[in-house]
Image (cartoon, rainbow, N blue to C red; front, side):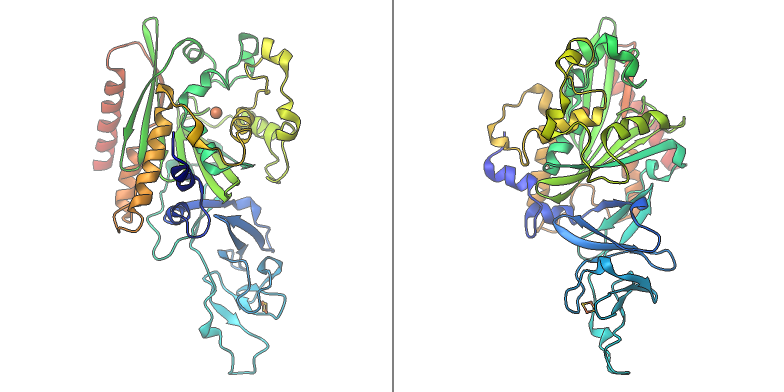
Length: 429
Ligand code: FES
Ligand SMILES: [Fe+2]
């Protein structure tokens, strides 16, 4: 449970809020690469702020403040030309760094381009997404997640627009317990599950009450959910990474992971970027696409899914008896969409009652509140790393697991020690 003041701190990201400042210390996905048409800019919004996103004639991506610094026109109506983006009101041109290149209404030699510095933000295009640093000063090292660097057939990214505060979405991702209920398929519906959630682990979800352990780390929280059943044990390791990332097993079947970023649009809406990654095998693209298409139109993230809040997600009481526990169809993302949106736009955490199964949620909130206290002290924030080598090393410590162990003694410690020894050896090579 949080106080009202704490709830505001962890949810609100508007101008001047501690949350808004915290988010501006990190690289955030702000669009999909495919959003930008070849020869036109688009308007986007993140952290309550409006931007124009475009590619110049050389293909370089630029992210600028939306409003023209001349007399306030909307730059997303501009033309791609003259080495940048030309405002169609009076023809000023800006390059991807926000440098003013032309002011055609000024007499020759009298322009004052050098006095204009339009707001521009560093961007990185990786893994089909556009990441931006919306803060001031030098950005931290870009976290080059393995999932962003592999060939396209090893990952699938989908972005959805969620009509609720960003933290509701994030808290769902790092909650290992709800798999046993919200996403549970009754035996007759097992065939519609992905390999990672069917098969041998299925019985653990149904019958194994998890033991939760949470470790606060310098990047956020490492979460162990352990379920013992007869002579076996099931271990799932997930992570919360400050301020808004979850790295979990998801539907990756233990080979790879699922990465999720929740990026506030404003306090009552956010974009969820969900990336499924397989390390050894190719991704099951048709299954992932099918799941995504049941939920959202990848080309139009503002379109409502067929099941939505207005129609009570078409909850089906017959299906609850013979198909899916929650009667909300078999798209996991829609189950989560119900859980988070039906709570209301900004959930009031001063009224809840947390238990053992909520340890991960408590750990993440503590991390966020502690990070906000550090904001103006100059101390390093969790996972804000300026050195790129250190960032690479840190990423190797972020372990994901979904495995059944035949050994019911110390399986968490054994797995983790083995994994860390292997990644240290790899880093030393
Ligand atoms: S408002 Fe953009 S050039 Fe005048
Ligand atoms: Fe979920």
